[in-house]
Length: 154
Image 1 (cartoon, rainbow, N blue to C red):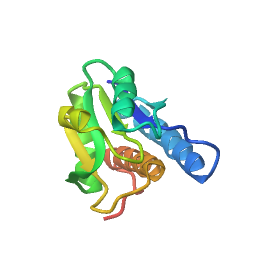
Image 2: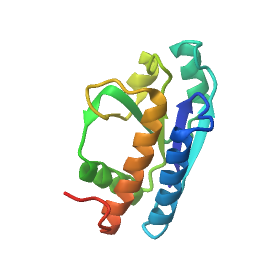
Image 3: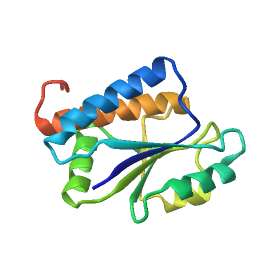
């Protein structure tokens, strides 16, 4: 299993980068004993060029044959335990998973149509750099749930 996050734009020094790095480090440590590999981050260019050029850059970065999980406000809203269950299922199926975060305008409709799953963090629109933080935290939370750790409280 390979886990990949493909995101449009570069995360520069600042609070978002600190949080993403921290949560991905926690995820790597928590996931090690669960058969979850560290997340590989692929930042692609195309920011500001529009959805089509961004989609081309994302396509080039996708792991061949990987399940495509896009982050999109029109996607499925799920609880943290449901996300953990889904991640555990992908692990048990030895599925490679590419999480995709588009640019400021979202994800190109053709790429969105190819996605195996669309995940939403609610009906509000979030800045794509914050979505990286939120996804990183949810991955760590999912690993904690799968490990039975007390990080997630119901």
